[in-house]
Structures are given as C-alpha cells and as structure tokens.
Image 1 (cartoon, rainbow, N blue to C red):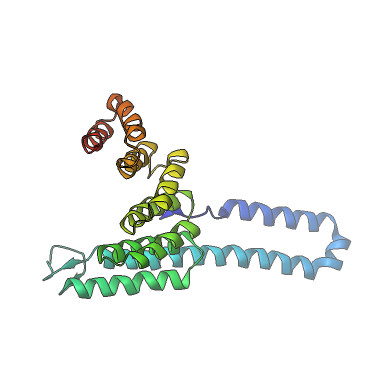
Image 2: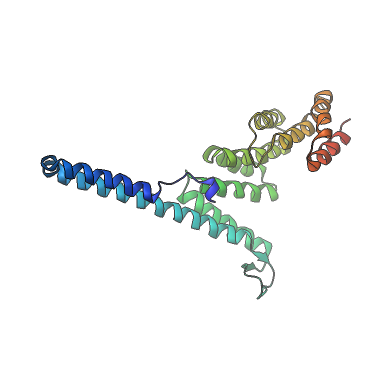
Length: 233
C-alpha cells in the first residue's frame, strides 16, 4: 500500500540533519558545553521519532496485508499448489476477514491503511445487503483516506446511496467525482454512473453527457457509454 501512505522521512535526510546539528555544536564549543545535554536529548528525540514512525508504518502495512490475505483466501478444500489460505465455508471466511479488517480500523483509525480496511468492510456489508453499515464504512474510508482512497470510497458510497433511495446525495457525490477525478475513478466513469442515475428524471442531460463519449479513444468508455445510452427512456 505504499502509494496509499504518506511519504516517510528519508534515512539520508535524517542523517544529514543530525550531521548539521553535530557540526554546529562542534564549532560553538562553549555553547555545546552549556547546551550539550539539551542538544543530545533533541537528537535522540528526533532519532526516536523517526524510527518510531518507520516501525508504525511497517506495522500498519503488515496488519493490512494480513487482512488482505484473509480476503484473498479460497473457500473449500485447500490446494497444496495454492499458497492462499482456505476456509471451509463462505460464512467462516467472511467472519474472519471482517474481524481482520476491523482490527486494522481499531489499531490504526487515522491512517490510509485504516481507511482501506473501512473500504473493504463497506463492500462486505453491501454484499450482504447491509446498506446502512456499508454507508458507514464507506463514509469513514472517504473521511480518513487520501484523495485516491476517498474517491474510490465515494464512488462505492454513491452506489449504496442509490440502493437506499438517497438519490440527491448520490448525485452530489458523483458530480464531485466528475469535477475531481483520480487515477482510480476517472471523470468518464463517474459521468456514466451519474447519467444512469439521472436517466429517468433528467434524460436530456444524461444523453448530453453520454453522446460525446461515443468518440472517446478508450473503447471501454465507448462501450459503457453506449450501454448507458441504450438504457435511456
């Protein structure tokens, strides 16, 4: 999940900063004697903070990786040639992965890893028809994650809101995604979803959105836009 986490301080940058501190205290010997204890405490604090952040970063990633391994597990008898874990039933797997993702959200609530875990919990809930729970997790993912995670969570949230007949809320989310696309939710993808949503109430606007996509260079966009046009009344 490196692309979903904040960049940590580089080790060479940290070493450079400590080196500059040592050089300063060496050339100002008297001040170094006076403030030596405080300087040492400061350097140790910087070092401790750096390595703590590094260890926390690794711990968050490993916790999420463990949850994802459960998510990718198979249901049924294990295969010796398949390195993935296996569960005897779908219910057992769903329970295990829910517990695993909840553990990440509890331990690391204000991190991208925690947001990603909320995202997966939202999908688990939506698959079981628990739309209220899905809405809660997708909102948490959008709130706590970076822009890319938030866009993906809001795209899924819009679909859940449609299922809950909260059409205005879903429309607002999709229009915002159109205005602020990301690498995981493109402007075209959000536009097609919005056109489908407003097809019955605003068919002319939906058609106006979809027709220019027939000339798009991306054939996936062309096919999806054509399918959406075919659904218009």
